[in-house]
Amino acid sequence: MHLLHHFFLILKQLSLINSTGSRIGWAIVKDSHVEKQMVKFLEISTIGVSKEAQFRAISILETISTNSCSTNFFEFGQFVMAGRWKKLREALEGTDVLQVPDFPPRHCNFKRNYNECNPAYACMKAQEGINLEEVMKEESIRVRGGRTFGCPSNHARLSILGRDNNFDQFLNRLPSIFKRLANSKF
Image (cartoon, rainbow, N blue to C red; front, side, top):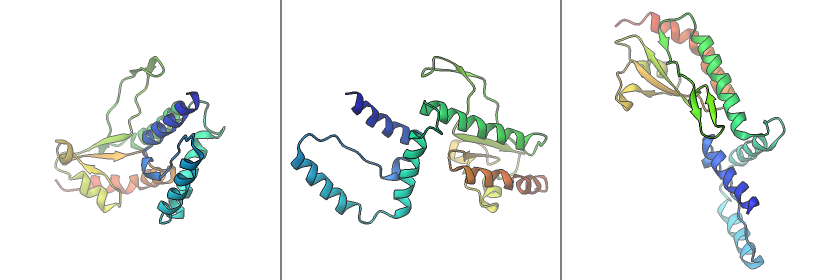
């Protein structure tokens, strides 16, 4: 049962890091005949899976299982997200053209203590009259506009769950976004 728990835990962890579509699978099979049929089925059904998807799945599992990751996957995720939020807040410091909300510490049922909140999405706000989704689109940054969530168009939601290089590219584009927002006519 302990081994089975780890298999389900891997599935949950992949869901948490937004990698459920990476085609990682496993099974516990007692019957060798059924196992052979399953292996044959997997060989046939994965013929069209790209090498990139296979390498991505491997890298996800390596990150979770290596010693470079802390002993607890959730602590690792919290560490990564805290670092990204720190970088984002530092990049936004001193500007009034783009803002993100502050989050008070919240109780964590997993760790049974209070932790800083580091959400997976940054809900950003620009000055009134600016369509933030359009500004971000012009800078080749994918966001979901505020109207999708019942907010004004000067709000947008950015996922900060992606790869490190994608997040770093976003941070590098912020000065250009600041200029565009500061020069926007509203």
